Each structure stands twice: as structure tokens, then as C-alpha cells.
Amino acid sequence: MPEPTTEILLVSASEMEMLREPIGKVDKLVTGVGMVASTHQLTKRLSSNKYDLVVDIGIAGAFNPQLSLGTVVQVIEDRLVEMGVEDNGAFIPADEMNLVSSNDVQFSTESRIKDIPTAKGITVNRVHGSAESIERVVKQFNPDIESMEGAAVAYVCQQFGIPWVQIRAVSNRVEPRNRDAWNIPMAIENLHNVVLNYLQHEA
Image (tube, rainbow, N blue to C red; front, side, top):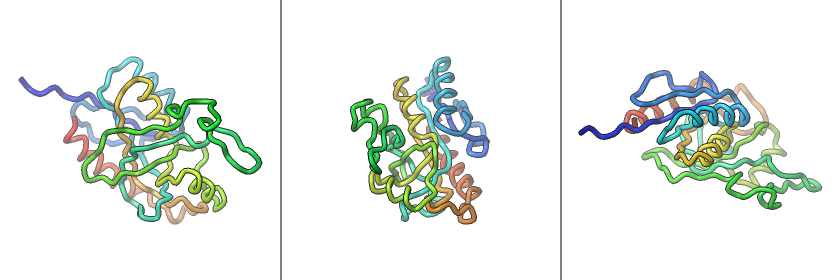
């Protein structure tokens, strides 16, 4: 008998980031940008469909200077970094205040993709674009990249007990905002090449 085929859900925030090619037993979901839209759309889909794996794909900004534009990484740790309180210039995360469990704001995956460097991510509503805010978040959380959806997808998958993989391509450095230094087309092309290769071996 043939081996059973894995049911995979491929998730992205935008049509631009979504892989165009049809592959095996892979469904696609474009959620819309941000944590709220991603949580809503993914919850709806997982409530009515069963999958063995969720693969979250997209572009990202890089804090880590070793990650050049176009680099594709697998995010194996992600965190919601804006849930908490300001305390006289300092930020105290919600889990450190015992308002939520650390499992509700920090997420990790045991899955590893061969030949793709791993990275630590943070998920934000407001991308960083000033020297002061970048310095603060790097000092406190030491992330490699940031996105606007990654930890939200991981959270929903955790609630449904579904394994997840997150693949991101670096489109820009996290620095005082400078759109002229971005390269979204290269990031999208590299992302799609890596994701296509991965899915051809998984689906």
C-alpha cells in the first residue's frame, strides 16, 4: 500500500507571500496582515478542517546583522513582545507579571528543516523603526527577526495541538525606517524557492 500523504496547511499574511504553485495535499490560507486577522482566519480554518502540519511563510525584518537581505530562515522560537506594561520607562512582559502563562506568549517548535538556518523571532503590531525602540527590544529579547503574524500562528496551532513550521525570508534590516534599502522581490523569490523545495519533500 502507498504511504499516507501528509495534509499540510500553508499560511501567509498576503497573496504576495503565498506560494503560487499547487503541491500535493497542501491547502492554502491567506489570512490578512497582523495578529488579529491571522488568529481569526486560522482558527476558522482549523475548526472545520484537519491538518497534520501548519507551515507559516512570509517576509521579515532582521535584527541579526549576520542575516543578509534575502536570507531564508526557519523560526524555531517566537514571542509576543508587546503584551505587558510600561513601568517608568521599563517594559515588563505579561508573563513576568504572572498575568498570563509563559506558554501563552512564548512558542517553540521541535520541527527542523534541513539546510535552513534557525532563528529566534518576535511578533509585533508595530514594526520597529527608530534607534531607541530597536535598542530596547534587542536588549530585552535579543531577537534575530520580527514579523507581524508568526507568534499568533504558533499560538493557534498550540491551542489545536497541531505541529507548526515558520519559514521567513529577510526583506529588510530592522533599522531607522529606510524603504530604499529593502528588497522585497528578492526575499519573496528566495522564500518561494525554499518553501517549494521543502513541500515537495513533505507533501
